[in-house]
Length: 415
Ligand code: PMT
Image: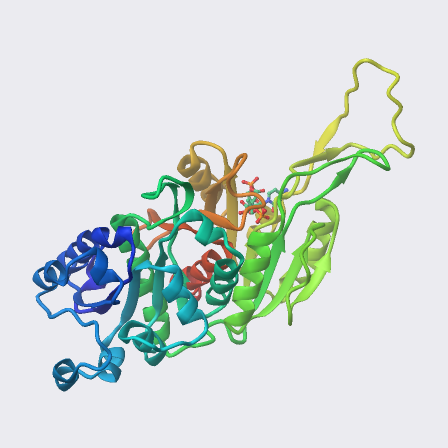
């Protein structure tokens, strides 16, 4: 991955059993050509020795804020400026809380406050600590900061014997997260753009549609709208004028975003086409019902018969219709798949004439309604084949920002 060549990375290590994996992470970063300065908190030193990191990085490990010798070499403000990226792995609940509230009581938290570099946090803690109200609030604060990204935590067995979310992401996954950030955030920032979507109009569909059978029954799906609303918010924070066309959800309308509420696929189609002409980017996150009952029965159907057949007819495909326009905006679709994700996603990318597709696995505990997700992006690259990037499992708010970063980098910057 050439993206790491000559990049300066601060690897922050907090106290936690996962700290032993940071040595492998450091090895991978160095192997990719990055310059890495390791910064350990006092608690980290209780779990792992600094010597390993010193040997792997070829640099003295920094840990004290008030260290005259180290400061004489590269002062902490200089170090903060030196960094192209700060990666904290593992990030403890304590350090996460400090960063969320702007504390600077050790070298690592001071660097976070003093640096303009993107900050990638890989949380690692006991699952109950992760679920605690305080941690939830702190993560929410970090999720809303433009320069902060989260990678993980992963779910599974924990050192303490519990099972659940809180394991640090594996080093290879973290390397991929760093590559994503270096490729998107930094190159987008190099274009000196804090608001890369300024002056652009973005139209987003979100949530489910409801197709009525009779006055009390309907056909729908489990979409909560969380993914689409997070994308709308991210696009607005990047400077875009956003119109959100939403199916029925319980979410409040995001601030400074025009929201149009609809119920059925036909209504969503109509609302999209009322605004599409002046749209620069169209992102179809909605889980639109593919079929609707041929006609809505006027009165409640009585349960007299043993069998009941409801005839369905295909709904218009909003995304395909937008992409078929002569003045087509940059068009991004989603693909919700239970199996053969790549095959079906690439088929939709080509068949629907899209610029990019974000595929996600859906099922009982994935994709729909959860706060987290994982996206697999496919697009047509310059070599006329298919580009691919995975956005690893994290909060939908984080994914939304990462997706917008990718859209800016790969599609908008070129349009
Ligand atoms: O809302 P959440 O609970 O946060 O869940 C998010 C999500 C799982 C709904 C979201 O991440 C997602 O995958 N959205 C797309 C769901 C879907 O309908 O996928 P599909 O593979 O059936 O459709 C492919 C694409 O065509 C989608 O962009 C869809 O919006 C679009 N489409 C589909 C049918 C139709 N009639 N019109 C459309 O525009």
